[in-house]
Image 1: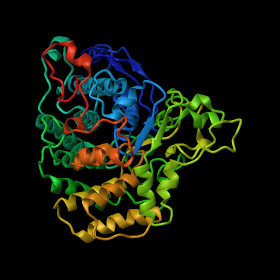
Image 2 (image 1 turned 30 degrees about the vertical axis):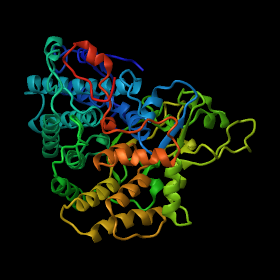
Image 3 (image 1 turned 90 degrees about the horizontal axis):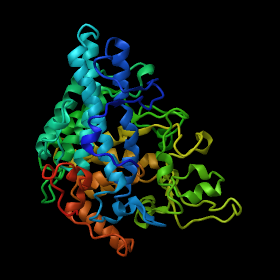
Length: 509
């Protein structure tokens, strides 16, 4: 992965085509406001290009969200970049995934700012008022999405709200977390006020006002989380659960979304953009395929199928679903089978094409997004969208808000959880606590990159991870988790770009 500095990224304008089935795009590169933005088509192409860097998000979710959690404990076959993320190493400042997430996000912010500046400078007379507002809202939603992930990953970050010169950027330090939240909330509120409630089929994949409401609700919940006693974490103890709940209720009461009865159908290649989906990142085979289905899958699985070109390129490493996670499914099923377990996890596979009857049952992995009948041409060509926010998440976040004191009852919480459990084929429960709700979320959203952020949001990251280390006997490889590790370090290249401009997050070197 390229290791580009933040400052260099912000000053090479590259607006590429977004990864979308419905957004049929052509790439636009090496353009300037002087020779572009002269007609409606130019603006449409530029706005579509702002979506491009979203294609990196599923990989962030897998490597920096899922692997950081108690859901996955890989076995390395060498010095792999992701090993330090899993092991809570304090020496991560040059780790490729952490560097790339920073660079990709700020590159995405730059692309959004470029189009926003162009709309303000040249949109009058070319764009109608309504289209100008919608294009602006799309760009601000995506910018807010990038910043929200930057905040959750790195804590304090520089706020860049327009295209700037190298000299200007070189004088902008990391903003306090409250200021970053205000910036995100302002963008999302504008998106809520100016995005449509839905789109025609030709524009599926763009954020709606309801996607913005769901995202803002999650922002308020994250902001309401604990500080862990550190400076720069995403939690501010702001107690804004009622604000989040109101947004979730707007989504629920709209009638535009639905709780699908079959769990597998949510992720079906033939049922994309279904009623569960509030916002997803669109991929299409051959031209803009996805690589996330292959990321946490061992190469030996593909070898057994005779499809070596579908591996993730990390040799014979394995990406084991933890014993603790497997036990959670078993305990939940009460002697039966949790449908989410059998759908989301590959428990056995042939490690060799020459001996297909020899099944590997010792290294189960997440296979949630693999459909061999729909595979593309290679490892990075899966024609499946990545769901960022879905209706079940909205329902369960509503329950979470109620348990934190927002308006509602224990019966409301229990009803939501039992709806989820019924779809999974397991029996009902009662008097659901926050701990029980978070464990249900863990089973529901395995492989969707939510677990680590869930733990951080609920103040459970340190205690839960250290308990997992003990229960899975992972003490030989995984460091003790301390509060400073709820965020990642700032990439070392950013610290060195202008000495003294950025400080490093505590606990890293």
